[in-house]
Length: 116
Image (spheres, rainbow, N blue to C red):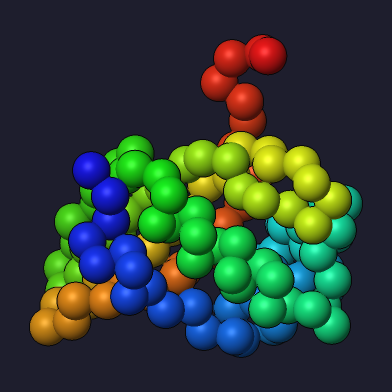
């Protein structure tokens, strides 16, 4: 099962330009270094946004977390990177009460489940 209305998913630019690709962000926890290692750069942040949008459309839900006033969805799968690699990445999406479009919360590397 895919995230409901994944084709309508939204990604606030600030989630990428002020968080994921900012090594100095206090809550980044190495996410920027991870994305930089695979070829993403701040000046072309739209590439990461497009890759994340494709990720939610392409992969199935791993976990659903119902919370008061919202539902969070965890999606795990390969994420296209500019250098051609596709490491396993976990993304979190949220649908707020009274809305239908999932919005991007965060993304981070996911350890490989099985060695290839």
